[in-house]
Image (tube, rainbow, N blue to C red):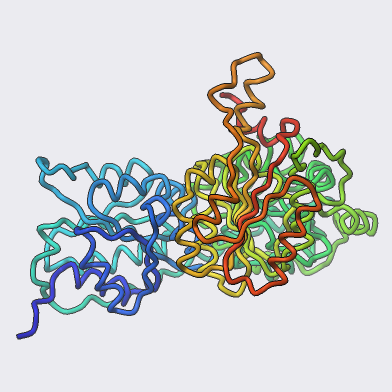
Length: 543
């Protein structure tokens, strides 16, 4: 006798049929059947050691792979454990389906108002309410995540998922066409008038490099990105790298000198524009985005163009027939070639007494690590150093889960990115606080056999608070800690490990790279706290 196909099985199968090929999670009784159904239907299942790690892995995978992923969770506590990762993904508009079991019995110890939790963090909530509509709702969940770039929490109540499935399998919902360009005449006129234009591309422009470079070449624009799109224009002689927080002194000067700044799929938020101080007072600001609500949401703009970035850029290039020198003078080209990287800027090394300057650490790692890499950076006072000193080959080489600014997401981010790009060496840049928060996923790295380099910047403190409150004489006992032997922790999980206190200790990293790499590597870097950085000052502005 053929077993009855349940709603849980049908929902799992539908998610895979509609395009979900990778699912992360922690399996409990409530999501056991649905998860197994996804695996049986052909999806890869990646087991995390904590639901928060699973959500962040899925977020990073979707960002780097460019397609929706899924998270599978137990009811109640499974969802609440994952909420920080879900919030980061929702704020970043990552296409993600969170399949979570749900109890609707208010007397159950697992009961929480799951739809309210989802909506509270900016996700879309869908609840499967019947066997007749279950598969259709699952198909809509995938389509919503894909087409609207949203996190969708698909609640699957326990009493519904155990019912026999009804009806025919639901077909995938066809993709919605992205909006084409609106009137681009105003944009073209602004480009014609500009003498020093700069393009700043965000995540919404990551698929539009060709079109943006063509248009920039016609109007003489320099090219920059937000942090999340770092690497997009790598290889161009006009690439300024990141605008805002991590901008080099040269990039900041050139952007500040622009008479026209065009944000392409970019929020132009406080980080990218340094609270507006990066833009000259008389500069014209234009924003191109496919969502009307995004125009002017972060700052006032002179002109907003609603439409797909690629389509708008192509349409504008078609109307801008002549070619102008603009900002692309030989003097600027020479300056960019000499000073594009932070490594090209001199600094006084503050290392010594058993601690290495984080700039020296990351410059040394940049020399050693293969160019084909994917770098994931956790949040914290340290984060600017790897973000600025570790180069990446393109926009797929940097995964930056910082929309919620939560410490502890970096290791899981690196795992998700590594699975999306198995052809590249994954590098996780962590602080000591974030490394300890996410340490459970070190086991996941070893279990999956990922050839990862985990770099822990250990300054034995929550450095941001030390820098912010220390100068005013506040006691710092609550944010300082004894030095942690992260190398020993790494070895306990099965990592190779090296402790770095000076440049010469990086030879251990070189040895690992030259060897068989049979185990991942943990670099326990004892770093100086250094002086307060400008990104720290921005983080605490208004607090």
